[in-house]
Length: 444
Image (cartoon, rainbow, N blue to C red; front, side):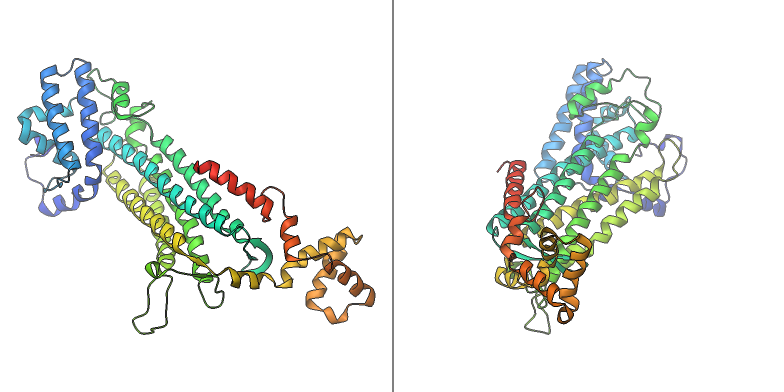
C-alpha cells in the first residue's frame, strides 16, 4: 500500500511508477533513515504522543532491522523509495503500529534529515582519505629533501625548486579541501525533523530531542526553508569538484613527468597498465582516469544547481534528483583519492634525471639579475642584461660581459636554493619548516 494512496481511485500507471521509483538510488540512506526513525520514536515517547509500550515495540523492531542491515542483509523490493521500504518491513514485524512512525513527520523533513546525515558522514570519510594522501605526500617529501628539479611556468623551465617543495604544494591544496569539507559538515549539521511537509506539525514535536539523538548541533529555524534548503548538498558538490580539480592537476603532472620527454617518474607496475599492441608501453592510466573523471564532478554540481535554480517553496518532486549527483560525487571522489594515494605511495622519482634538468643555467637567470642589482645596476637594466645573456650573448660589450661573469661567479644551484629561506619559499630551510607544519597538522 502506498504511503499516500488514500485519495486516489486508480493505481499508478506502471510506466510512471517505474519512472518515479528511487529505491535503488536512495537505499544508500537506509541506515540514516532507520536512525532517524528511532530518534523520532524516542521524541514522540518523551512528548507523550506514543505510549511507552508502543514506542518500545517500534524501537525493538527498528533496531533489529538496523542490526540486520549492518550484518549485510540487502534492501530488496519494488517499493517507491527507502521510506516506503522501511515502513513495509516494519509493518511485517509490528503490524499497523508501523504507521505510527509518520505521526508528526513527513517524508519531506525525513528525507532531508537522512540526506544531511549522509553528507555529514561523507564529509568525514573524505576528510580521512585526504589525510591519508597528505601523509603519503609528506612521507615522499621527506624522502626527497635534497632532490631538486626545474620549476615551471607556462610549462617552460623557470626556476629551481626542491622536489619536496613541489610535493608539499599539493599537500596545501588538499589541506584547503580538508578545511572546506569541514565547513560543509557544519553546513549540513542541522536537524530538520519537525518541519513536517512544510508548516510544522500540530503534534507537540520537539526537534531538539531528535537533534540530540542524531548528533546534530542545531535545529531548524523555519519549516519552509528546512524542507527546501539544499545548500549543504550544493556545497558538498562544490567541495568535491574543487578537490577533483586538485587531483586532476596532480594527475596531469604525473602524466607529463612519466613521459620520455620528461622522464622524472616511473609508475609502479601495480599502478599502471600496458598496451594490447605495443609491448614496450607502460601507461599512466591511474592519473589519466582521475584526470578524465574530473568532468563528472563539475557536471554533478551544475546538475543540482540547475535543479534548484527556480524551485518555489517548499518541497517539489524535482528534489528527488538532489541525491544521485551527491552519491556519485562522494563515491567517485573516494575512489579517486584512494587511487591517487596508491599511485603516489609507489611512484619512483627519477631524482638523477630531475637533478640533471635542474643544472640548466637558464634556471638561474633571475638570480643572475638579482646579483647584478646587488652589484649596483638598476633592476630594469639588470633584468635587460640578464635576458640578453640568454638571447644575444655574443653581442655583449666587454663591460657587460665583465659584469655578467662577475655575477655568475657568485652563483650556484645550491646557493640559489639556499637563498630562498623565507616562509613559503622553495629552499631547504623553508621546506623544513613546511614539513614541520605539515606533520603537526597530521599529528605525526
